[in-house]
Length: 279
Length: 268
Image (cartoon, rainbow over all chains, first blue to last red; front, side):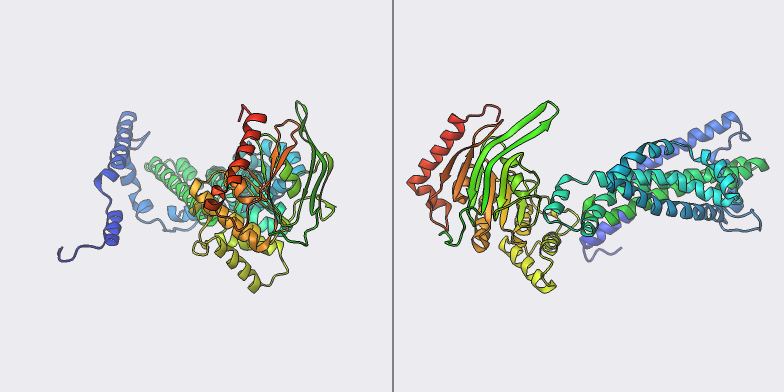
């Protein structure tokens, strides 16, 4: 590298961000390394058949599950990329519906004190129901596994969205309401200038909790009854009981975790973009 | 300079009392308040904490209804908040998701819907210029200082051209220099539009600099108006000129005597 011109501050800053220094990555390297070593030791202790170590997982699943995420042998034999996309599609429908319906119901419960108070016990009871407890009843109602899975996502994700939206509206600072009263804002102007911007951070808190729950629920629902999807893949691998099945399960678990994290971060990022100065 | 057209009872408190129902029984905050405010008058209300100053103002802004008696504007009782009685709150109450410009514009749009977009822009520009904030118009409240926020709140309040301007200790949280600047800016805008001003303050010097009359409250419960000081200084006023006036010291001592001897308050 020639050193004729000093690098501009901006370019050094960019380079520093691109090339992380050792002290920055050291904690990750050491701690994740330690985690993998303990895992490998545990595997050696229990036997590879019962618990494959990280190296076994890599070796067992490299071809085709890691190297070809999008293979398709027909039927339900698909790459993990496809399986995750199938699950994500179900989540997208269920979660999308939950977001729309949840914000609408939460908005009504927040704006209408009577309804907010009256429905609160219903919401409080139903929100604690574990996702899979909804599955049998939705199978009975919809008579279809795929629709039922989507409904389970919907009904699991909707409660935190309803609750946070309603609380966000109830918690609008009195100052802002006073401004609205002095200016005699119309209902419409009040909602667009004050209610929505003040509530957006709360709504996104709810949406963020909900996306975590939705992802949790889809994997469980697919394990019970579904064609395809990452949850189906895990259960299928377990039932197949082949040599590599435990490695496949572990790999799928890692994928589930990473996708769940990405979903959480995505919703948080959108929330930050949307809420501007309010957060 | 006083306007000759002002009617004597523009804003009137007649036998006003305020009793709050609390869990420990009724609490009488104000009793027998009688006060007439002229149109265009600048009135400061001074008193210890808990003397019902804010209660008094809340009945003008319409957030509270008197338990006894009546508060009337133009002879009509005040029944609720409205933009003809604009409020500058102690904590600014700007909407944090709107820019400086949008905060003022939103108020003008809501309170003066008859203005066309062009005139609205002129009104907003004019008031932001009066408080020296045109440069900062694209910033959000979180990005500017407390003094600047209160300037925006004042600009917002006056941009709707209210008949009465209500200020609840607007400069309480500001440092001395910023406070003095804002007092002068407030007087400058007030001179231009001549709204009737009711302002709560803790600061005797501030009251003597700004007001035509200073209403001094007795201590609560059942607080009332103890005394009203006429402030005789010529306008436009300048701090240095007023402080050299021998009457300034007399008025100041009188007010201090009222607040700290006759109505001393050990909790404050």
